Every structure is written in C-alpha cells, then in structure tokens.
Image 1 (cartoon, one colour):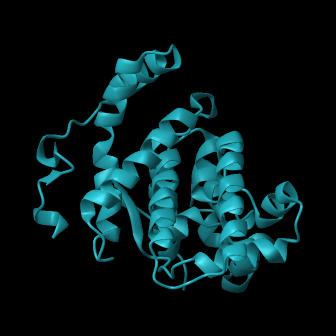
Image 2: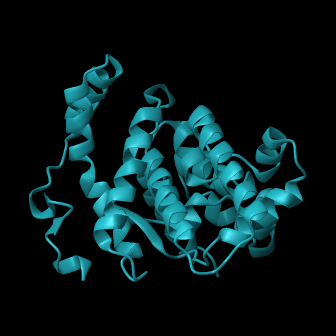
Length: 258
C-alpha cells in the first residue's frame, strides 16, 4: 500500500521538505536566471505535491515507483512552462500537468486497444491542450483545440473519449491545507451561462447577504461558467482560496433559502 510505503524511487517521502512561499518565490527567480541548482531544489521541494496526486492512482495495479517517476516528469514540465506573470499559484498550474502525464502513461499501458489513428489524434489534441494551457494559463475549449489542429471538433471529442478513463466529478485531485480540490472544480459548466439555476431557485434575497467579493466569484463561476482556475487568475488569488470562498458563500446562502 502507498500509505505504508516510505521510500519511493530511493526518495524518503517522510523527510520531503515543505517550501515556504518566500522560498518558492526566491527559488523561481533564480530558476528564471538559469540557476540549475535552484531548479533541482524546487523540484525536490515539490515532490510532496506529486506524492499527494499519485495516491488516487494507487489502485491501478501499476508499480507506485513508476507512477511517481511519471508524476515527477509532469512536475518538471510544469516548472519549465510555468509563467509567474499570470499570478496563479504554482500548485494550481502543476496539478493538471502532473495528472495529465500520469494518465498518458496509464493509457499507453492500458490493455484496452484503441485504434492507432484515434490514439494519434488524441495525443495531438493533448499536446495542443498543454501548449495552449501554458500560453493562456487556462484550459482551451474543444473548439480551440480543433482549430489549432485544423480538424472538426467532433474528431477531437471522439478521440479523447476513446482514451479517457471514467472518473468521478467528486474525486479529489489535490489537498491544499484543509480543503480538497475536486475534479468538478477544474471543469466549467456552459449550461449555467444563462443563470437559470439562480432564477429557478429565487436566490436574489440570499445573494444580497453576500459581500461583493463573494458575489463576484459566484457570478464568474455560475453566470459565466468559468473554472476555479480561471476565476483565480482573474481576481489574483489561489484556486484553493476561490474554492473556500465559493463554498462559504453557498453555505451562507443556504441559510436564507426557504
């Protein structure tokens, strides 16, 4: 079991360091200046992030050491592509990158056969997705990916569906302090664009009880259908903070709903 495994790939996970915010900032400034030692220290200081993510893959029948190594590759890619100017926390950016790298590895080793053409199209789509995410600090839409590949969006959807493992929307992907970041927090819901859920539940009075920041977050999340990552980038706080504020606002609203 992973919970009882202290040493993974020669790394004593019980002794992994926890970098403070100031240390992360100082190290990344050195990384941007080409300091290789700072890069190695930053990688080592974020191995706990990889360790927390691979917990959810521990029941796949794969050697946990292999999953950890693949997760580290995703971590390194995230470090090399992270843009500090966007004001997003590194963990918010890195989590999807690490998960994506692990899922690609698991798909490559999946016993279920997918046609070569579908697999190739899916990999191209995932590469474009990573490139556009790194460029814009938000996940691209299917239409944007299809446009980049110059193919119909239906081809992209079909290819990605063919290699995708089913996953619960309520599955936690990362724990930041006391709050978990769930799969559903990474997904935008275009159906909520017309705010019909607010109209149907008559929540106008409850909304008046919230402060301006809470109203703004709920508006971005449920009126405009943005992900928590997109909201965090827009208002300049971490995804974990957005999650906490969103949950607190909804909890407060429930008190005034009859």
